[in-house]
Image (cartoon, helix red, strand yellow):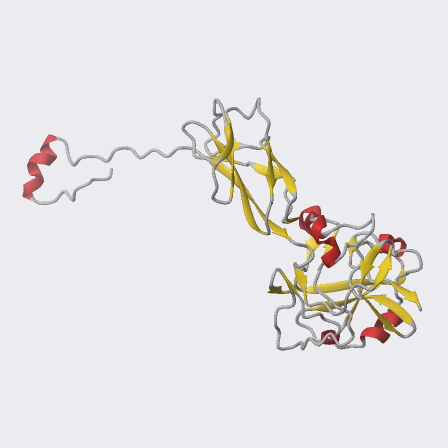
Amino acid sequence: MRFNLLCTGLAFAAILSIGGCKKDEDITTKPSLSGLYLESSVPYVAAGDKITFKAIVSSLTTSDGTTPGSVGLFWQVNSGQRDTTTTDIKNQELSYTVEFSEVGSYTVTCYAFATDYYNGSVTANVEAIDPETALTGLEGDPDVVAGGNPYRSITSGGLCWMAQNLYGTESGTVLLKSEVVAPLFGRYYTWNEAKEACPDGWRLPTPEEFDALLGTSAGDAMANAQFLKKDMWPYRTEVTITNSTGFNAIPAGYQDLTSESYADQGFGEYACWWTSSQADGLAEYRYIYLENPVIQKGKGSISSLALSVRCVKEI
């Protein structure tokens, strides 16, 4: 038993004889709602786009295992007015459309509420970007058209190289399912996809062609680029960025397709490209790691590893 007063000494004898120290009121805690999540959420959209979010309530639970009589939803964008209160999610529309009218950061929150329960919530953070200005610091201007899409290019050893990652294709996947950044970072392709992805007249480079162009210095291929005004290659004493080759390497990362939950890996740390060489289910690639000044070589699964692609054509 817990007491409000320290019951010692003769002064409290009478109180104790009557019934002891006064007991605190019982403290009750309301149960809470949890398990709400959102479908159709992507971290990047183009300014002016509309996205319809769907609240998934099938896994909604309570902390004490009880079942509320009725659960409602409401939505909020940034710190604005809460909107579209839904009185019973069993019988109402669960989606909400947001227009990202201006460039900037948005926080979209969906709340679940019920009488005598603490609210549950789920939040999506979305960046509305201008694709024309979001990525800066690449060398050159788009000067070739491949597959109907403009690309920066460089020439070396009798070859014309794409000086940015391949993006304008039906195959491949994009960073965090955000299509708006495909022209900026390119798409990710398995080797099986990559060997067919280059536009007509273009192809995957051989390992020898990569090595002849890039040499060994990672800094000579890395672009001093910024995405949304933040350095894409954070400063490291081990690497000096010059981009003297004009290759415009940016750390777009890669995708591990063996696990959908953790598919996107290495953004801000790795730049990786397939070569045309493969044997026994493994294909060669070249990559740059943020903290290593040397161009690296690797081999990966032709079907479950997805990397960036640079295409070449004979001049």
